[in-house]
Length: 140
Image 1: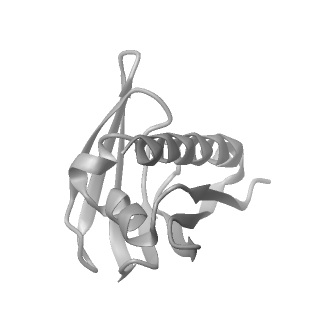
Image 2 (image 1 turned 30 degrees about the horizontal axis):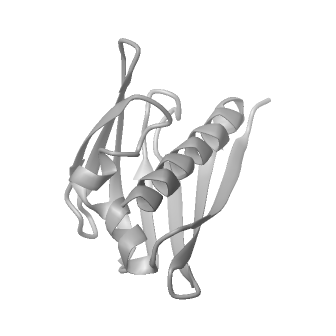
């Protein structure tokens, strides 16, 4: 019997909260990091009830991700659904942004409702994306 799993990724990023939040909500900036590897096409309608589309591209593969925004508390929290070929339907992602001093942000990503069989892969994927975001912010 398989159930649902929840994963969490936490990372301190080298930028203020407002800037990190912007990198999560701007199409052009999402396109620079929102995939574990390869490139990204992003479309964002940033409003409660609005949707997004993230297309991850790498090594001849293309993986479509879509979702809907349920909560936008700028610059502290985002809550959205997450659908991909691997989630078996809509799952839920909450992202919190907390200041750590004036120049750093603690990012916490909680992804719930995942099929147990894909939880480890999503843990690694979100971790890799957080790493790419950290590198982009450090270079900005």
